[in-house]
Image (cartoon, rainbow, N blue to C red; front, side, top):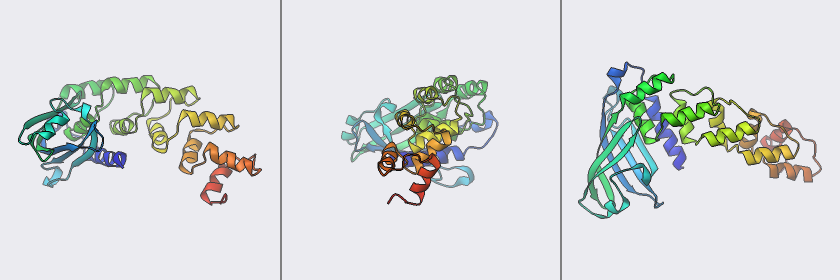
Length: 263
């Protein structure tokens, strides 16, 4: 559920972006914020609500996510135990700096935030071929710690089709250079970003691909996604083989799952 919440928040932030001239769009953002303990000791519940968005709609942009404590400077969990303490919790990245300033009450930091975008980051991204940034999108980049070095590493690993918008999804679903290389080593080089995102969403992993191949199957990228969606796992294939069905194609295995013929 945490991933779904983060994904919806990030995609909404990205969707609010409009293509304007950099001088017009890179303005500081303001709103309310609060930070509270999470059920996991190394994370916190972090909420942001913008003062206003396009059209003046109050609260039209919100972020509510479970975030690693290590993302912040100037703030520790111990601060939440000191009622009345003023805290400046800062998230700084290449894309900008977000500061949540407030007072602790009942184990929660409540206050106001300011996000200051970094035009130098936009200039560096433009040189790499990525444009169309505004403050909202840069705020999302900051929350997910998207850095130019990470994007360059993905490009060097052979990822194609990276865009200003799908960079956020690549980060959310942990499409990192190591994962890209592991799939490339298995015969899936130069996959487009959207395909890799789909791989991660549906749980395509190198270990399972190796198991499929050991069983005589050579699924392509789309078939791997289908097999994960319809739970055509190595265990399911073995179950079918134990029933004497040894020569089923991937398409037949998927159909069996869709129409529940194995039940």
